[in-house]
Length: 133
Image 1: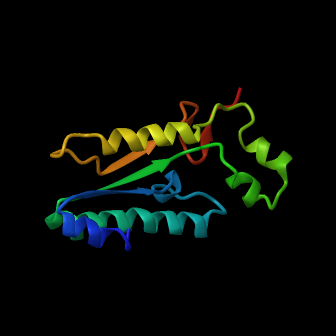
Image 2 (image 1 turned 30 degrees about the horizontal axis):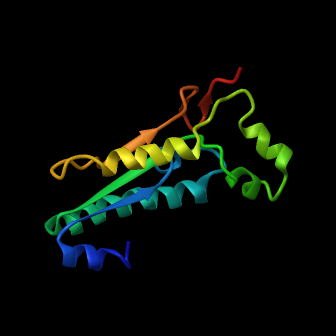
Image 3 (image 1 turned 90 degrees about the vertical axis):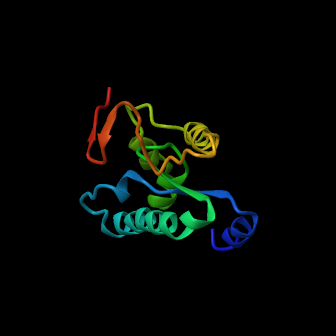
């Protein structure tokens, strides 16, 4: 955003999409640093929206819940079995779900900006309530 926003300002239009997390909307036990950084993404998006408003630049924040990515493998330091268990009994969101959401928000008419989206798998209500089958 820092590199491209000057070009967008010069062109008189643009759209920045920041990817946050449900952790940026609600906190949970043992997630203090992660939740804090994702809350920062939310605040950054809100502030950017204000600062770039006069330049006709849209800013959208997308906050997914459970998405199956390599994040769990990284989080559990390469323990693939433990990472798989995060998604056990749940159909999580996919990278494609998020990509389609990004496409949708960026394809709205010029006068429409989607400020904020929380997108969750059907089986998840929030960071701590998930139905597993």
